[in-house]
Image (cartoon, rainbow, N blue to C red; front, top):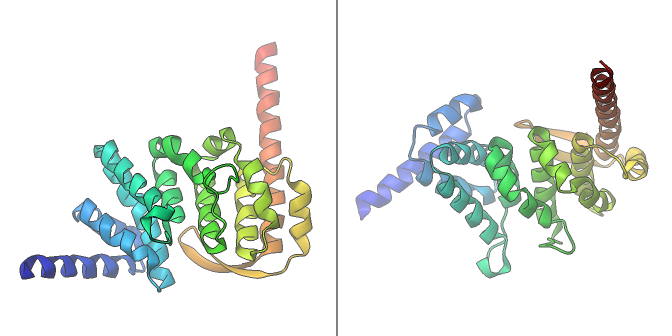
Length: 250
């Protein structure tokens, strides 16, 4: 028993040391060579770590590891997703720190899991769904949606994500507002332009983790980016429509 306990402690120390490496790609490569299910247990436990760097690097690592698991055993990956979902239920007895973020990261890393579970992530901002009203967890949900929107916006658009995100732009929590603006910019701001424009004077600063880096941004900057991104999306759509019209005429 002592030997097993020592082994678990050694692996935990190894995993936590790796997620702190400056070269995170190298860290992920090394993590991929360790027993994946044991690594996942350690990473999930690290989601509630007081060290923000450990928590967020764990989020990124979970996406990578679960995607690798899914490539070999889809049902095992689904089990991880269900475990994360359970931790957000009242019956679990926990709070679910970092869980929505991890779900979003996993789905950003694996298309099949995104197609199966994106609607669950969105349900956490649906008042007729599994709505989470605790703002610190709301931040995680909206971050997870934004992360998924970076890679698979079409899946979210199909599920009416832009409409569901609109109320988040008016949240009393500045981080939720900023993250909602970020996600909107990736999905398209149709129907929410006026709400985003109202945030152009919101100079509240928020701390964000995006693209594996930490930074401080103003809500107004995020809104401005979203409005600018929407113009790019609209231009691309117009070009595609024109090309399609030309093709049909030809």
